[in-house]
Length: 551
Image 1 (cartoon, helix red, strand yellow):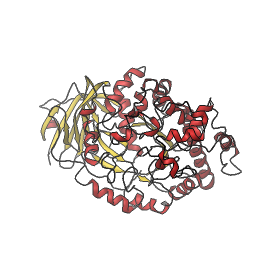
Image 2: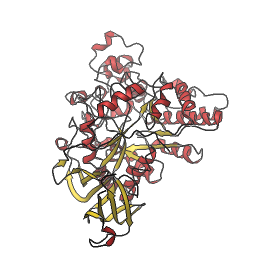
Image 3: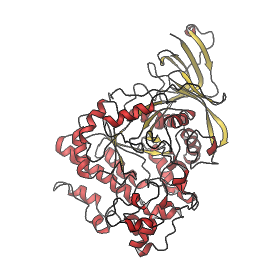
């Protein structure tokens, strides 16, 4: 047994920024003792069994981040990212655990067989710990419980086209079946919560009422496009051609797989918007290089309608069986959802949580230049007022966590030469960049400025709870994994794409000036990344977290 110790005058321990000393066992990887409020001297008898002791003051000691929304794309799309490069990027930014999303890899994580293929691909490539989400797609209902037993942390489904053919969206009838199947399991069901209606009339006709006892619920879902203020906005938001969540390859036949009249003749169109214009002459003057054009095609109402539907289905499940699955809304981007979410959490007492993302908290649509498609994601980055409201939603505990939604691709899929927002992949590469972004923009955006206690709550503690790892990850506590980082909150610098560890060095943050730098990252007591020594250690120390969840 080899015991080592670290300390700092500034540690985040038990919800406080305070002095502290940690002892940990490098053999077991566990924290063996925590001394709150104390930076022990070198000669303290409590350090008698310690082989090495480092006082990192004035730098901070923080728990390693737990990023629960990462697309690593391996196997199948390793030209986009992969386990090695993605987890190297994560650990360089203080992320000690990532949870890999079920889609964008081929095959998706929707069966035990597919999960095992992914596990095999991940072997000996992990520079941080990793857990896995399973996927909900039509037809895999009976695969869900076996996936839970194999260690997936929960499940994600789409309420709108995902943009990849192997991961189709689910309808409300299927969601009802999923809730029924999983209501007694220790898990969480997550949704990409955007919902596009067929037309204005459907939207105003109370969508598909769930049953005769849910008239008030149906009233809530109705009138769904009341926020759409112009015919152009209506045309963009109702176009079936433009609704795919994350367009693959910018090809019409892939983008419009939910558009019945898209035949081979339409594949010659250069842009999805060209096809949409043929269907609606009001779109003739829409400029696809303007970010606001894309933003109008993904209105807040998409998110509101999806959230209303999920809440209605949860209520319906409770009416039927007295319980429902915990639900988590991924990458919530619209401030208009906050009051709906708060009502569901407090008045309706539903087990529903939601995350937002670093890009929604640090970027506003008014600042996105024409043609810069590396800012495209779904749901979209919205206006400055919306950005500030999301920060407020975190402070009010309506939103519980902040994650990366790291969704990279090859540069050609961003089609930067054309700059057509409708013709490019929607996703932002950002895993490992979150800590300086949170500190920088939380300081600028909040009054009082963001605290490290808040950052740890939103990026470590609550994310570990979301995935049922709160007994080992997200906190600096005795018996927990010794996952911690050393953070310099004084260093100012610019993010440069070419300095990242991503396979494709293209982000939305190139030349962003930020404050705060991860100096060292430790996973289970082993140094994995050292900024001052030039990067990562030689051997990847990451592990796959496959024990079935207890919470």
